[in-house]
Image (cartoon, rainbow, N blue to C red):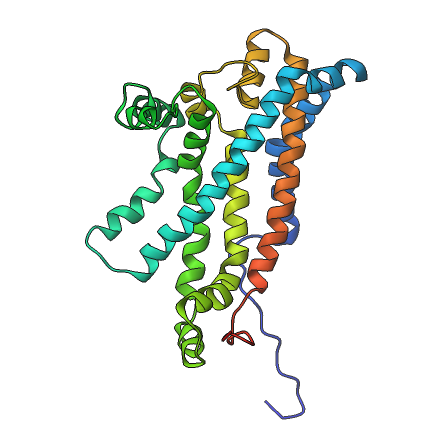
Length: 290
């Protein structure tokens, strides 16, 4: 080949069909499995007139269910934020016998049927259960209370925080901590000013995922909560109650409220994921030592 001739363009091998076919399959799947069911939900709630719709989603029972669902999910996600960070730290930074078993048990709430988890938690935290009796001595009620709802949501939400933080901790460069120590930073300063800023996007992502899972949880909560209307009734249970009473439009109206909340959480998750990808600690932040 002479020097004057341009080099042939390199052709990239594509293991799947081209853009048009791939995009068509993607849009078909999204439309069939996501858009159509959600559109049907909105259309079913639209059978109610505006006044009835507003009365359904704002009556005292629904407001109490919103308060419990959002409040318990927020508290449980906050608890998991701390416990998940500690658990991820232990799994990444330390080597001990049974570490693989503990790491596998983290995913147990995701693999375990939620009804099984609910029955197990109810047995453990009931007044006659081992943990329930301990709480009773402290003047607290585990099962059949709002505390029981929080306990169930902590159980099913902790894997999201651990799995969000774990890979970031593994990729965190040890040189950053060594450089901070060389500059005179204490362990507390190193954690707060070097490690925690790098983990913040992952922690927020895990928190949002645990919060979103808690909002929609039904199986593990229905057994331990006691299901008292206005007291220990969550929104998913209220929706099921409406369905059992053949009030389909009212159930759809409550579901639309949760759907909007889910969209807002997903939007926040996407923003957090972008921040997480941008977070790449390459050097020790300025002013590490106090």
